[in-house]
Image 1 (cartoon, rainbow, N blue to C red):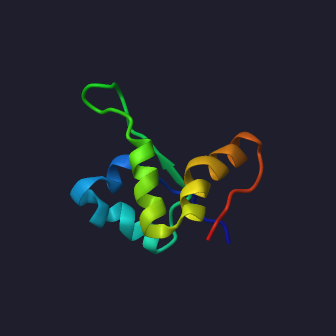
Image 2: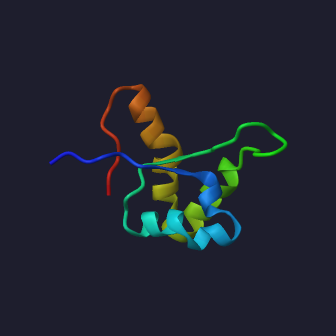
Image 3: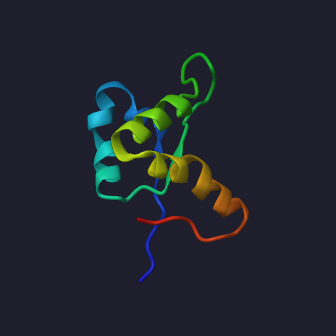
Length: 84
């Protein structure tokens, strides 16, 4: 069976949204990438580092590393990604 790799925007882990869909998807181990939806530095600034800290605090450093560094790097190298 094949599934879909799932990306969650970093903004889903900031403020009240941390209790929302992003956290729920992580709890279900359904997230494979954490990315930023930044469009510019004024209206939608990149907040990936803050979201990564939040993921590490709530779900562990291993998951944070995989979502931000390991899995994106694996895609670039055409290697399998880490799945839970």
